[in-house]
Amino acid sequence: MKNAHLLKAGFASAVLAVACHAGAVSAADVATDPAQAALIARGAYLAKAGDCAACHTAPGGKPMAGGLPIDSPFGKIYSSNITPSKSNGIGGYSEAQFARALRDGVRADGTHLYPAMPYPSYAGITDDDVKALYAYFMQDVQPVDAAAPPTQLKFPFDQRWLMAGWNLLFAGGQPGAPVEGKSAQWNRGRYLVQTLGHCDSCHAPRNFAMGEKLSLGLSGGQVGPWQAPNITSDPVSGIGGWSHGELVQYLRTGAVAGKGQAAGGMAEAIGKSLQYLSDDDLSAIATYLKESDPVRNPDDVRAAYDYGGSGENYEPALRAGNPGIGFNQPGPGYVALTTGAQLYSANCASCHQSSGGGTPDDAFPSLTHNTVLGRNNADNLVMVILEGLHIDTQDNDRQMPGFADDLNDQQIATLATFVMKQYGNPDVTVTPDRVALLRNGGPNPSAALLPAGAIGLLVLVLVVFGGFRLARRRRRAR
Image (cartoon, rainbow, N blue to C red; front, side, top):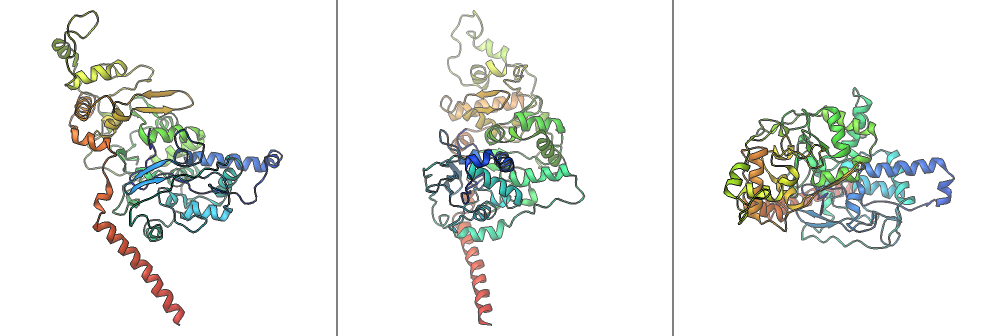
């Protein structure tokens, strides 16, 4: 999916613009040093858990060479080359510089990174894990001597020094120490969810300056045109009704019959990251999510997977009005695809069945009891129709074609409305204007910032820095 790990609601995504070179160890040394080999292998695992490749490998590009355009509310941010290339990557980083970029969002030359790289979450990475990541990026990633396209945002967002003020307000790090009174599994899950996995980058709402609302962590967020759902323990709005085993299965495969399947950025996260985690780590994530603080959306009246469809059979009326449908039946068939039933029959029924039940092997998932269709809006359904679905796991490869080039906004709105009313939440209606908005990248949260909000934030940052400078001058004068 294009930009599948999309900045996650504006400034969220995994741009790990950091790495290393100093004191490089040769491949021969590694081969004869089991401890170093184990350290590098651990770093490779941690890089999977952090989903580094999702942002730092462009489609058709070389691993970790950057160049992926990430859509933010303020323009495209291009991911960095984080191979150990000395000319275009991060081959000159020391381990301390690597750690500073990873945790504080500051490059070796002192330039601030944008929080498309989730350093507010990575701030909690332990020293041992930093060491392992450093060893992996320095000694196992192949250097690529190619520069990624430069990020060029409009003023004032092109002023990277402003990120120092943003960091004072919205970053600040998360403690990596275990929480007393909690089990080792819960603490491991917390570390994977809140730190390495940076799940709040997608699954937390954002404030006026695109900082995460940590008080509403994991309760859902906007990721470009996609909506990352509530994954707190709430039984209606979140995953409280999912069993521990179902959560583990979903994280490993992206699909659970009777609950739903992954799409968009989550499908990519499973394909490139989560499916490779150990059983123990997946179980730890499930444990932490099941015990997270519940957050209820007041608009939700029942769990999203609880919607089982109307049960009405649309085919008799459809066939009565279109005698050419069916085997060996003469007639003109569809003159034009104008109704939801016609559009569904022509484009969807061959895979998802007229009942919406999919196939027994779940290769084509059921549309009933499916979280995508049980929300109080159909944005994610529209995005699946537009862009399709591709989730590649070690067990199988599931694909669905997109219809962005085949159906216009009115047709997609009609089809999505039919699917919601037939198989999901019948109270949802989709408009062509909404489809057009999603097709073009979704709602832009920066609209609330410009111009007054952006200027206000700039003034606030200047005031903060002015206060620091004034305090420093007073100390010097004493």
